[in-house]
Length: 316
Image (cartoon, rainbow, N blue to C red; front, side, top):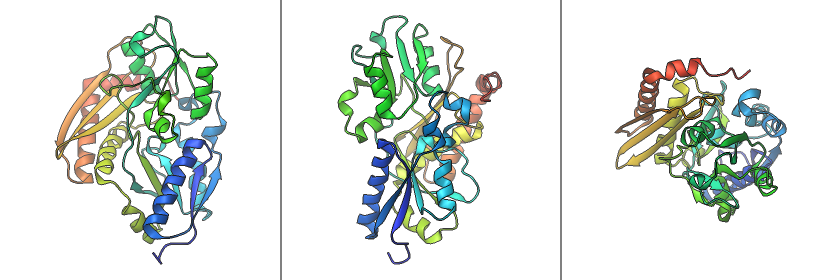
């Protein structure tokens, strides 16, 4: 396509999973548009700060800021992200140009000794990097010792193999993309642990003023995934979503209707029931997806969510 720059440059984090994602998009771009594509590998603040929870140091936006600077300065044309790492509000001047078809959106249980969460003895140590998982684990098994787990996917698996944890919870999509599906002891049913908004989907971010590039990349969008994740992200956005919010949101298609569930909890209230809302609607466009997400968020707030959010510890 003559209107596209050549070579196209993709800004990417340098973890093995991020590089897989960037290479996947590079192959798609080469196949679809016949252009040369190069990768610009970068280390982000989120990759560098490994001794504190993301919710304490600025949230998941730490994984995308440096990539956005590369776009802004013209060193790269697009950035590829795991959509669950993308803040609900992008900085002015940036847009999501495409969302690719979703991989498995579920969480995965990884453990050398225990078949699933129910097989764990009381006091077993479980590692996770996510407040969303923390509140769901503690609601289901308040007797577990849930501990922080940071680092890239390979680092987390190494910490498990060293015996630091009895088991860890990871996104199934990342393990499958890296050919590590054999490490999955069991995939966790969303009824048991609801995924994060956008989990399993890849998003492509560009500068808003790159009109021709935006139009070209939009042809890569998988519309069912786009509408589902748009609804999920709308829940979080309406609640003022950040990494310090223990929120899960997941949408599934049932014919032409989208069923959206969200769960909200408190990370320090082990054993307390979660706030849960499920709604469905006919969704044919982004406006309908947005409306469904807003409706679920408002229902959560009305069902005690407002008070719960006000009681959450500060992310500072």
